[in-house]
Image (cartoon, rainbow, N blue to C red; front, side, top):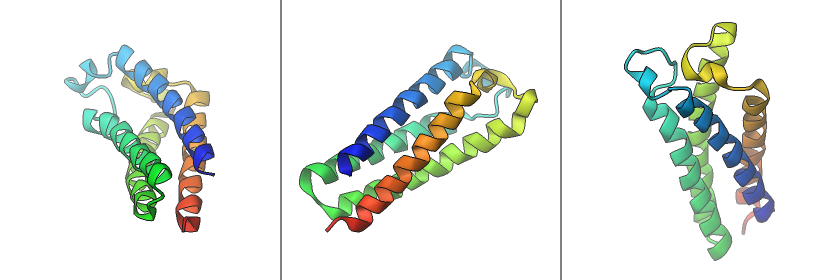
Amino acid sequence: MGLVTVAAWVINALIGVYLLYLWLSGGGLRQQATKVTRFPTTLIFSHPALAVTALACWVGHLLTGLRLLAWLAFGVLSAAALLGFTMFTRWLGGGRHARGAEQRFPMLAVVAHGVVGLTTFVLVLVAAASSG
């Protein structure tokens, strides 16, 4: 289950990198000064930073078998998920009137990122709970 979790995590990271690319190439950083975007820079970069940190903890758990690292990965991933949910609600709140660079996000990519992210979250929780 550990490697399946890593695979889901990597797939989700690739989708996330695509969304970040769209935001950056759409002028997301430039729009910070004019408050056009609904996504503050700290939110945009904290979400993937926490997710990558959690993945590192998860890989550490797989390599060492330390249960503490599995739970640490889950905790850090929980924080990343909360930030991701915050971005999702801000994006969704824009609806057809989305502002800034995030209006370029394809619905399919956003939904896929959320679904694969939720799947990863559940896999980490189940694997951490069953690790002994």
